[in-house]
Image 1 (tube, rainbow, N blue to C red):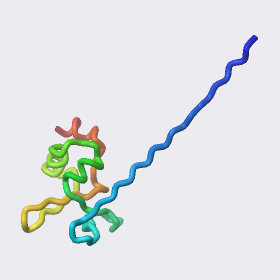
Image 2 (tube, rainbow, N blue to C red; image 1 turned 135 degrees about the vertical axis):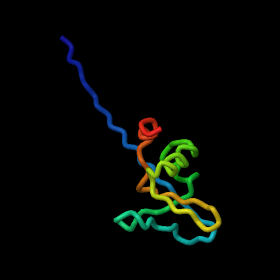
Image 3 (cartoon, helix red, strand yellow; image 1 turned 30 degrees about the vertical axis):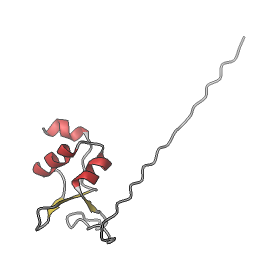
Length: 93
């Protein structure tokens, strides 16, 4: 009679993102988040973090699913903490 062995392996994956600004200043903080620690990033950076297409970020902004701020020059920044899961897009659109 042979004994069988069961081996269990666990893999943890950690992702880190570094956001840099041209001026070297700190990113803006979200005024709507209660924690006061949520940073605002460009839609391109938000899309990379959320693993969704850029158009999805703009759709979330139009549907007001995320916190955002428009600059006087027409620029847009999005709150990282307010990004929904990618599955929300299919439910909302």
